[in-house]
Length: 532
Image (cartoon, rainbow, N blue to C red; front, side, top):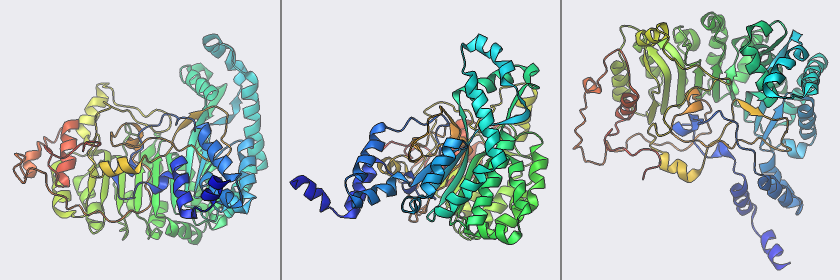
């Protein structure tokens, strides 16, 4: 009794610290201006949440009313819902309890591939698949197809999403993720290897993405949600078209609330024209998004976009922008310089992932401007930058240009291939940042929150290639750290001519050296992540 009385005497602030040791909120750990926040190190399925974590929080909440309320802050801060009858039932249950719904800050919507109407004859495909893999549960597919059709016909998803977003009065972040269970994965791989099966079964992401974006977007508009961040690492261009059907005032109201937007488009069929069709929508949206602090727009590494940068960004200048990222784009040097110049007063982080310069442009000109004029820049990421001529030559001769596996993840290289982060030591102390993008899992669904338990490091492998997920603001960190610890005796030259830019190819060693050079850190002496 005495020990229990001692615990009850602890302040709420101290109890919150204790709960943080059990299950910390990853969104609080890394600041928006930090390179590590944009780094999502693996698209592999996150490890299953520890049963002890959920049990510990559950037991804590059963102690008394006060502990129940404190525990709910952690237990329901992040809610994940799958597109399934079970998922919507659980979401509706949470939304119906105001004392729980008010704690939801992050909502992740996990959507499977949709079976194309008229092409769901899985029973005719299974004999061949079973011959290769052994017995498969036919009823699993039958039930899944029926459930999907029933949800779409009844509009159960749209109804529950509106109810939930109306109830989530503290919502900050919404994301759409693609999910597939093991059996769907086996079926997808089998169909992709057999061209003669396309008329029997087709699973397609584009209609699933379009439908989920439409219903979730409509729920955001109808609920006047306070949500300030939206992200999707595998967005289909068609999914954004529905926004054009809404009144401009409603769209502008949503855009004005946003402080972070992370989009990665993964539809490679005629992507240039599809994105050009969205140009007017981007202009309306980005012009209205006056509070934007972090923006990322990316495309598949092996299919870089050819549009001019301003066909998407329309010379918009965001007064509060701290972090900006693009991925897989063919650009002139002046396009990058012009956008950076508009944001020179505040920009701290710049990601130019898979950006290819066109003939006549040189990376040393871009880097010189960033180094000389971007005085607030604290970090820059140049992973897999290069030149269009070399990229196209590789493609023409059949060289292995990396493809993006499902979910938009890109290839990784050596585990030790780290970029440099001036905050690496602080990040180690703070703990891991988290996000789950493409998710492959079984049918089990957590009873409470998302298992956002991915480690986040600066190795720049895997999904950091997508450069997604920007966080809440952290205190300003000036980029005035010393050039190095050798008191200026470094043999590395200060001129851009010393960068060794040949206008043809950029090696991985070069780009890491260039990243340090831009922010005036010595390539010889700057510590690598995790090194003290």
